[in-house]
Length: 219
Image (spheres, rainbow, N blue to C red):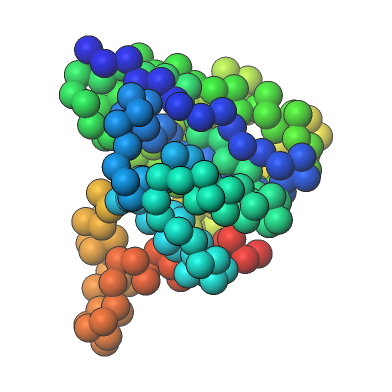
């Protein structure tokens, strides 16, 4: 049994208006066995797509390497754009040493509501995945139950959007397609993706994510 502990504290600028919420980085980020192309920061996996998507949207010219300059690039972007990152899993146990959300057991959650209280400018939570078992929305719903708070559906047109009340604030949640390549199969099964790729053979799962993320990160 492997005790998988989150390697990073939440990174939240004091004036953040958006909060990126995922689960937990792959185990190698906790053990320190990083690849040369990994960035030792949130969503820094060489296989992850969040930073390449943001790089494309905002023309950031990011470097993808295990260096301090790569970390500072990402922190500068988050601070300038008033975006924080606070994954919801503090620790979990795994039978197998992989990054599967489904493989997490005995999950210990971070108290996201505490951070929302500490940072009252936050308006929107951007979930890096949906309501599948052990996904960020799924775990956040479990977290809210402890406080008798429920998500109320607003829309599911481009992404699933909900809202909830907390400390006399109305906050919004957006469940985006996971930036993990593991979500490519679910994207490929979507009717809208199948229709688009029939018209454009150069269309891809990356472009599908890009169009969705661009809308919510630019708003």
